[in-house]
Length: 62
Image (cartoon, rainbow, N blue to C red; front, side, top):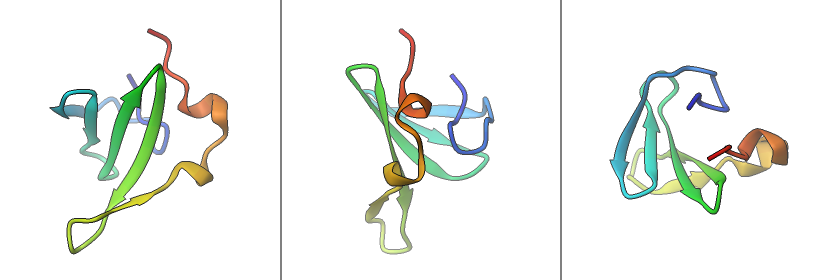
């Protein structure tokens, strides 16, 4: 898997269907073959980045 944001393969698994890109520091959740991208804020909350990507960029072939 590559990060849709930076194309890095430096992805770590942080939970069930949850991944983290160590290159650009975004969190990804996988549900039904689709990634949901989030930025981790200073207070630990998550802000969605999905609106920055085309739908086909968030699809993951299983």
